[in-house]
Image (cartoon, rainbow, N blue to C red; front, side, top):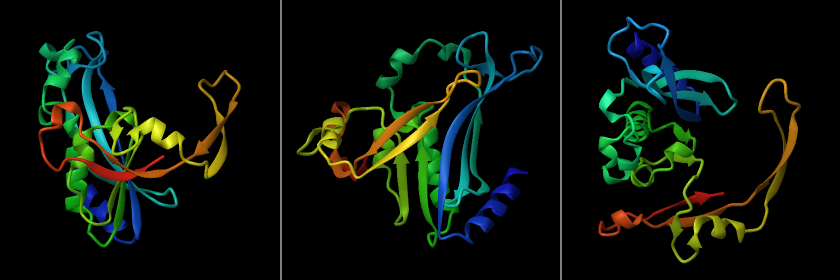
Length: 214
């Protein structure tokens, strides 16, 4: 069923010049179905179910085109409480690999005639994702969470703050339905910078990566 859906999605994508490929992960919580087999823990041991990671294709006009990729897995019980050990393991052995796998699959499935922009939240701020080879016309837009070292400019946050404001937007934000909205003013700055590898990767040649950051 999913293969047929993906083929139809690619057909719709081929009618576009540029598409946004939005990656995100969600929990499928089956805690109220205790007889269900093959589940794993979620954010705590009282929640169990499946993890679902999808890549949704959307036109630049905001029209959903369908799924390009779909990954689902159950966490083994013995992995609970081991978050402090994650940095010692390579990305390929962690759940973080899902971001790279989805990007690779999208590049394989979407024709090179279509420009693609992979979009993800701060959980995808992974150096291995930035360093992953991308075909021409394949770009990434990731919400930064790490103040990474950048070439000749110290660190990312300081380098961006030194750039002039190129635009400002006023946004209406609401955290809860019963709480009034508040206004937030967003300033836009951007720069082309080269990210340096983290300390654990310094011995590997050719890993610095350039991009636009704002």
